[in-house]
Image (cartoon, rainbow, N blue to C red):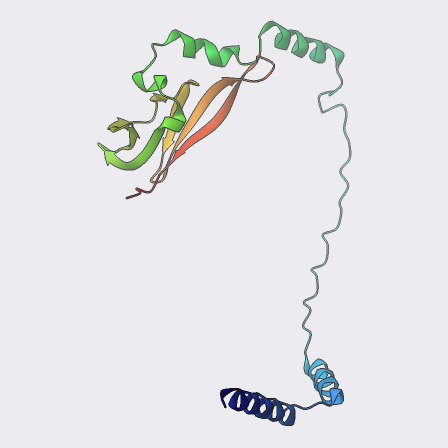
Length: 180
């Protein structure tokens, strides 16, 4: 009996769906054609291009970019002073600060505040919270705190690249959300 009811119900539903549907594809095509005819395309015109005004080249008033004496002097100056040595000398001469022994990825920025008109970052290392001001040094790559905002601490690090040259790079600590 249960199967009979199911078969009758599904058959009746199928007949109802077939009776309600419009099987003429022409009506759908007519509707699409009508919608396309009613659509309004608004295209804003492009602004006119600015006219090109050529400038005259006056070699007498400008420095010669291919002057061999200037090029030789610049190459000699660059070869006597290795890249980055001017950045590194003051860094090696100063005493290291305690937070320079900890890598940046072991530090977590947990907040910031203003103390005596200066921004102070609150940095957690293990379970201790340290306060850091601009000009302090963090991390193992001579990282100097350049700026403290509400959400991050911006650093300037001095690192050696693959060729052994010292270069400057930017680093930052982002404010981390507490996880329960």
